[in-house]
Length: 108
Length: 113
Image (tube, rainbow over all chains, first blue to last red):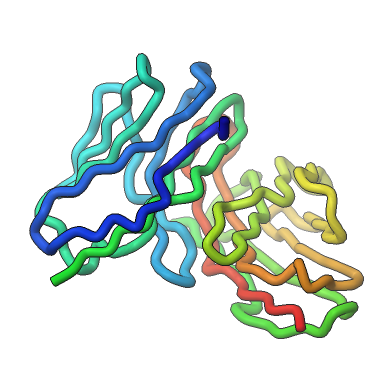
C-alpha cells in the first residue's frame, strides 16, 4: 500500500457543481497535511493547509479524518479555472510524502 | 516576502552531456531546500534535500548530484545525462522545523535527446 494515495481521476465535473476528493494516508503518526494545486506544466502551489478542526477558504473546504486516515477537499460552485491537478502532502517527522494527484476537469 | 527562482526554465540536452540547474531563495535565512523531479503524469519524487550549507541528503540513487554552496543557493548537477533524466525538475524551500509549508520554484523542463 502506498503511504499516500489519491484517485488519479480525471474527475469530469460540470461548471457550478460541487466536487470532493480524498487523500488517504497509511501512517497514523502523520502530523501535518496540505492541499496543493498544480496547473498543467506549472509548479504546485499551496491551496490550503488542513487543520484538525477542518477549515474553509471561500469555495474550498478541507477536512481531516484521523480515525479513517484521510483528508478531503471539497470545491463548491466549481469554476472553469478550478481545472487542475490537486496534490495532497502529508508530513511525518520532517518527511513530506506526496500523493500523485487527482486531476479535475471542469466543463462548461 | 520570500521568493524562489530557478533556471533555466527549459532545456534540451543530448545524452551524455552535463547538467546544471540553479535555484535561489530570497527573503529568508537557513531554509530547508529540496530538489524534486516529476515525470510526465507522475507524482513528485524527492531527489535531494538540504538543511544547511554543505549538508545534502540523497533520497534516490542516480547519476544526479546536488550542492549547496551558499545558504540560499541549491544546485542540481549531472556529469552525464541519461534519457531517463527527462522530466520536470522543481526546486522548493520551507522554513526550518517540521510541518512547515513548502514553496516551489517555477520548475525546469529537461528533455534529454
